[in-house]
Length: 291
Image (cartoon, rainbow, N blue to C red; front, side, top):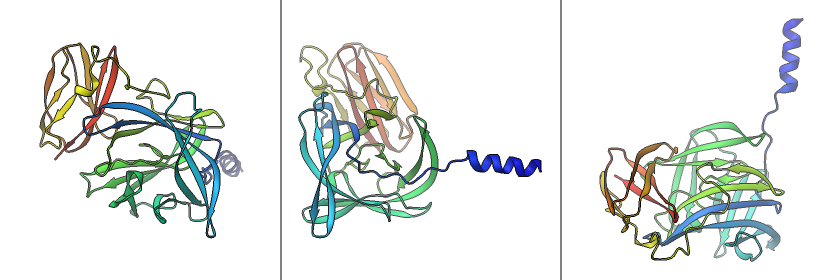
């Protein structure tokens, strides 16, 4: 009798994660981006769905973006379609559809997707390493962990109902785009925060617009990149600054605080690593590929 009672309690208290749709007009995604090969500036893009458009027999949702922190000046950016039966999300570009997400995958399955911004000239495959259920702001969500072995062992994470932790329309394989270091800062549903990357201090970040006589962000160079382990971070400034390098799991593998213009770094790890430089006048982020 006691065993039966315990089983009934477990049955009624365990609530598995329900299938969660990605496309919804009440959602907002804030994504941190850095533009250009020399990272001339970093900024926040906010994404939101506003309306639908029917092409043939298929219904697409119009995705808009804005750069301002008040979320007032929206511009159309993409057409997305969600198949709620197969749990797949597609991106329509140049009259063709590309797979953006597949939330019906199992461990060991391969997802064939395209690089950031629907670049069909740069396709790649990712393998599902594991699937877990994690809680974000009180809500259990299904989380997919991927490995892309053909691209320096890139790792990615998809969260059902939210998307890629590198950004709604982004991924780690940025070799075919001029956007570098994309990262999902926060995600909201009906104005309520449902995901936040603690690497940041707030949902809207920007390093664009600092005066040149302050911390000259556009002078920062990392070379050679890719590297075989030894490389230089040249800041072009003798201001005191913090430099950190993290791996794809967010673990710090290098950290230094000094006022020298350049720092020589030697690492034995391989893969993609994220560089952050923090200064009282602003911050900068980029990445280094170690072969």
